[in-house]
Amino acid sequence: MKIAVYPGSFDPITLGHLDIIKRASAMFDRMVVLVSVNTAKSPLFSADERVKMIKEATSDLNNVEVKSYEGLLIDYCRENNIRIIIRGLRAITDFEYELQIAQTNKTFSNGEVDTVFLTTSLEYAYLSSSTVREFASFHGDISHCVTPHVAEMVYRKYGYEAKNNNGGNQNEQQN
Ligand code: ADP
Image (cartoon, rainbow, N blue to C red; front, top):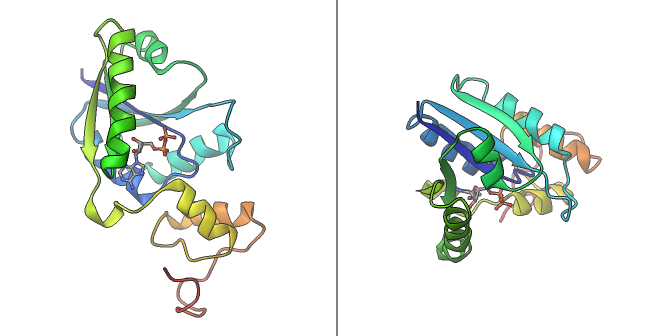
C-alpha cells in the first residue's frame, strides 16, 4: 500500500492546495493531508478549524484523510509508516526552500523518507494562503482562490458576511 503525506499550514486551504491533493490522491493508495501545528506562528485558523475546512473540501476523495500534528514531520512519518512526502512547487523561489527541507528530511530520517514534488497547475501558480488572507482582510473577492465554504469561513474571521459573487460590483477589488 502506497501512502503519502501532504503537510502544510493550509491557513486557509486554497484551490492550489486542492489541485495538488486531487492529483496526488490519484497516484497513491492513501493520502494524509497533515495540518502542521507550529506554535511559533500565530495562524488565522486553529488547527481544528483548518482540519474541518480541509475535510469539507476533500469529502469527495475517498482515499484522503485529514489530520493535524505538532512535532517533526519525519517523526509523524515514522510513527505512521509513511515514506513519501508530497510538496507543491509554484516558482523557483519555492524550490530553494523546498529542496533544503526535502534534503533535511531525507537525511534526518536515515534515507527512509523521500519528497515528491508536484508542480502547480498554471491557473493556481500565483495563489498563496497569505494572499487570500490579505485580500479577504479588505473584503476583496477570493472566490477564485478558495471553495465557497472556505471563503465564508475566512470572511467570517475578518468580521464580514460572505461576498455575493453574482451580485455586487464586479470591478471592486480586482487585481
Ligand atoms: P507551508 O507553510 O508548510 O509552506 P502551505 O500551506 O503554505 O504550507 O503550503 C503547503 C504546500 O503546498 C507547499 O509545498 C507549497 O509550496 C504548496 N502550495 C501552496 N500553494 C500552492 C499552489 N497555489 N499551487 C501548488 N502548490 C502550492
